[in-house]
Image 1: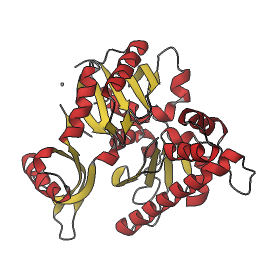
Image 2 (image 1 turned 45 degrees about the vertical axis):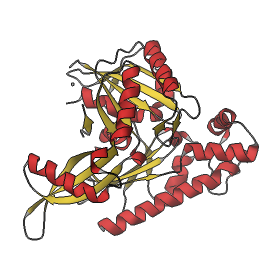
Image 3 (image 1 turned 60 degrees about the vertical axis):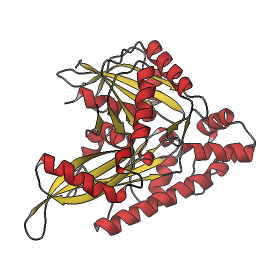
Image 4 (image 1 turned 30 degrees about the vertical axis):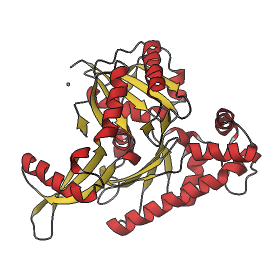
Length: 362
């Protein structure tokens, strides 16, 4: 799905500047399909990114440069993303029209959602599917995406200073769905009328919920509860610094169900996990009410927080829906030599893989 596009080689690089780390993936385009030929992940200094906004540009530039150098990646053709929480995403239905007419209509339609001067934003759209209304006329389901130009330009500046020639700026929500497309489509036709699949991408700062029917996006929402909230709870209760609390979360936290014994860390994080689960349930209830879809058949879990021990089982039990771990490398070959860090951090690479796929699958 093309979003904020700005130029070709047979390789493509995805650069994901997250809250806590930068992830890069380099894919090579082959007749048999894309393959990973390089990757890297590196932490960012705390506070370098806040609420999806760049706060310490020199530090971020230094991390990206060092990461690309160590991974031996030359970003000839690159794609990056901004946080879904920092953009406006709305669904609408419009009569079928020519591309030029649609471009003009979308801009007019978007104005009602924009709390800024229209000249201060970038507006783009994607046609999700064609529809037939009750009168037999043709309509299209449209996703509108609006972002402040200042935000987009700040990312472009960072990447340019890092030596990254960026072909397009995407939204991390869309990039994650792109990476998980094969997982989403696996059993898309197994339900009458099309399977309803929810993708929960739980990162450090936000958790994004996307719901698709027959592989078509119908709903998306960002929840400001994610991995950092869990880390913050450990910091507050156990009197730890951020780095120590993060390590404790990764190594000791486990969400048990069915009366299982919990350690001290698990008891601390359970409150946040319960809050997140409740917000996901509210989102599902809202989607069902708006779409008149009675069931969500399957959940695909992604993002770094998806690795929290027992999280997938807990969500399945609480929501009454089967939960599967997403595989962003499904259908992608891996030929790079050292793969330990790639597979151990696979969920964190989801957005970067989705971005790189834009240039490796056409």
